[in-house]
Image 1 (cartoon, rainbow, N blue to C red):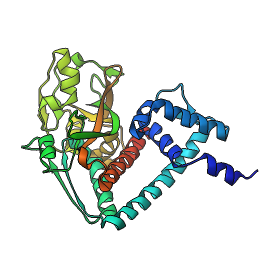
Image 2 (cartoon, helix red, strand yellow; image 1 turned 90 degrees about the horizontal axis):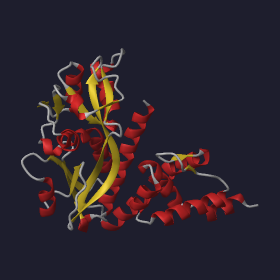
Image 3 (tube, rainbow, N blue to C red; image 1 turned 60 degrees about the horizontal axis):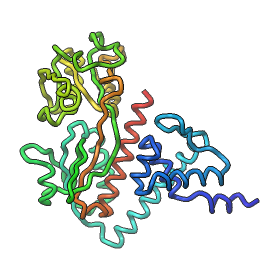
Image 4 (cartoon, one colour; image 1 turned 180 degrees about the vertical axis):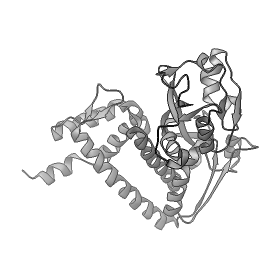
Length: 320
């Protein structure tokens, strides 16, 4: 038996991409949508691969889907091979087109600075000839600026439904309530809207309508709570730790912020995480671009880079 020949006709790049997307998104359905194939086609592709290799790649009855030992091995290969293929494709496109372009980003998600700056740094190394800029959406509407051509991409928590724009999904994440150690909610498995009565909510300086904790948790229950604001994520958590209020932050942002409390000094945790509602309060993170620009190579590469960095951030959070 020629093992090299068997593997050459069995395993290809599309399988590795499929495995990585299923792990990233947690389901075959979401991965199929991301890869622009039908769920049945992707499921058939994976079953065919399992039959040819004689292994099971996924434990399909778990939520989210979990990899078997064989699946983990292929994910390791995907994490090594796919970035190299992407880099090679990027280099060829840059040789062809001269690598020039413009990517002006507008940021509507304050906590996104944690992953966005590493993504911007990696992108600048990948595309040194692309003009790059970043701004916050203070004083103007990000989507209007995108339609008008003033910016090229908007990083936000709400996908849009617009014939001229397209939202590219980055990840689903859970919003977690953060309270000081010893708080009355600290040991609760989850908090209900009425549990926040009497609390001060520490938020970023944006309207309540743009904050999921108000728009999708408190307001539907007919409730609101007073708040104070800060633009800096690290200060937001410091205010919670010093019992100035409570906050809501993305699950992927918390490990780094918690590690920075008190300068990383050893000791008991100064804050606790609490789920919002029994099922959690989940949001989507997306990059919205003009449909006409969706397939520009440097925009595709920025999206891929952002996903990789977010995957690493989520992995660190899961390890905690």
